[in-house]
Image (cartoon, rainbow, N blue to C red; front, side, top):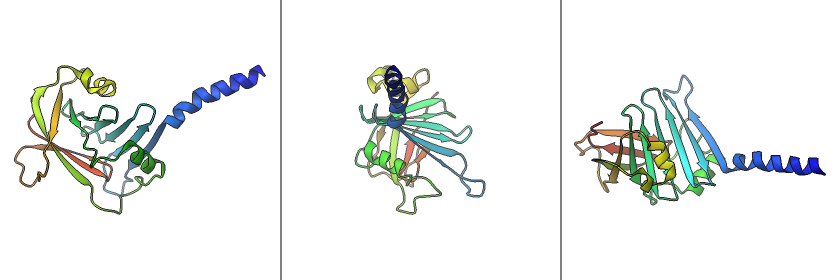
Length: 184
């Protein structure tokens, strides 16, 4: 009987984290023209999604915190973190993102559907002093590096925008442009 209880306890300990996270990897083979690889991790227990874009020096990491409604992108090349409010009208819900990941609809060579939705943000030049107000997950990701906020520019077009922009494509569903000068 003790062995059954111990086995059930161990099964619960190891199975719970496995059910809380859902991962998917997006990457190109050598003939696809895609450089780098993206992976998505959805943590339903903490209501966050983590998107990693591994592409050498142009790598970045994004974290979407559905509890605080903040998203952050850590740009490794610039050694900065940029935080913005999540636009829930455009960004998929955690449930929707999790369903896409589980169904592996994001995996492969492309969406085969409509072009990604674009969001353009203007980076504020002043550094964030108190990371804790952004929530624990984002504070943990951005701790120790310069962190800035960015505000969405509604109805803007990159064609007419004069400032330099950094682009982060989130799979084939969202294109985020972060525009403005950073003094690092």
